[in-house]
Image 1 (cartoon, rainbow, N blue to C red):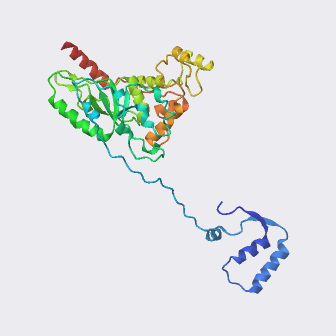
Image 2: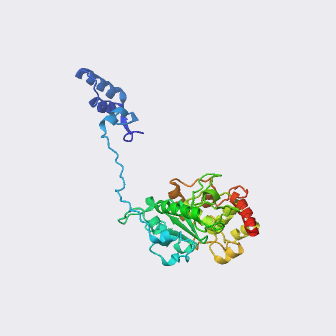
Image 3: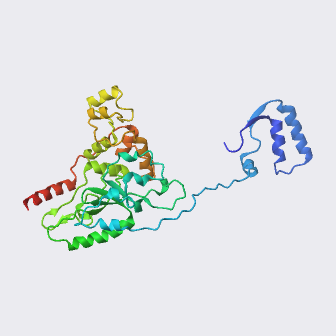
Length: 365
């Protein structure tokens, strides 16, 4: 109801109050006559009413302007291209020791520094071959405020010598793109480039391509003149960590879903008989997480990366990445919120078929 709450008043009181705010012009005699009749015949009967009518109430109340508090202005960092980034394209020199080049390459969890995610992400639990560049981390010049709204989207990765995955900024990707294309045009016959730049899209709807393992879309293209596709497919165990990092909501195959659950250390429903028995014993929590390492060994969850339950952190990260609440009908949302695995397509990935045929051709050479 608009305005103040209603109160009980006699008919005489209601008329007396409203007549003071009424614009009706009437003689004093009429007003006194009406008041006397209401006093004589109204008795003590009371009605639930407001002081004024709704329109009068709106006229009497002061309008308050609603002001939205906007965040303070920020200044972006000037992009930088380090020499170590250029050295990644050197195919013939010794392999860079990324762990010693700390001013340029950082463990993947460092992308969450100065955000509310850092302490929740369990920084030491991620794969050791996943990296971000310092340029990837630097977005704005901060004065102590949280960088949650400025978390850089994870789109470009560099596969370095088929051993390391490095997230790079668009500025770095632009330079690497040109350099790798030049090397591709100048390569010797039969020479294979083991460093490729790839676009990684979060799968936010069913049957969406994430591009990262498409041979013709890597930079340079993972195609050799004599043996066709020579793509290095990212192992599923690495891929699911990238899914967590970039906000993927759907899986392409049941293998991806299984590896994702193993990475998180969860046993969602539907469960096997052994898993149901473990749940009854209290090994599996209500949300599906298995905490103790010996229980994980029995349930074949040795690939779990996290010591503590990561589900709340991952749900929060998914919402930040996609700027919306995690959908219950998505594969990831169903696991995180309901503890249930949804049906996933079982078709074989196209790049697995092409890579298999390419390997056969390479063996013949």
